[in-house]
Image (cartoon, rainbow, N blue to C red; front, side, top):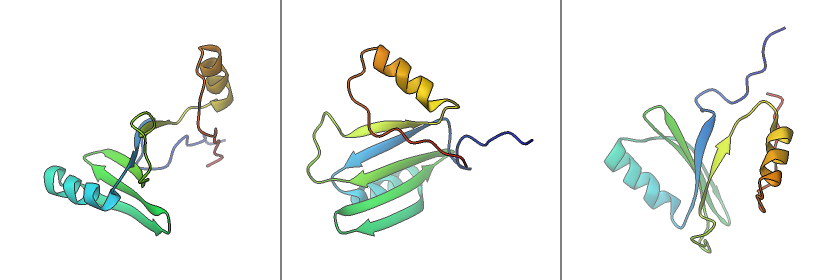
Length: 105
């Protein structure tokens, strides 16, 4: 049996996920400064979601004009046993996590 691929091709075990006020401006900036490549862009009523690649790293981002400096970014971490990691985080006094997602990809 082949081993389950933990994360999509082109991603790493840990990936930055930014919540910012102006996704289009960040895309323009990252292209100009870092020669970033736009991988994905989804425009919705409440803002834009996008992914850019800088070198071998994908940076995911979403737009939120009501962001707080306390909740403006996160890391997506791909692990084999998300439930065990989640339980360990809660036991280590973590008091807030976004919804836990598992993948069968």
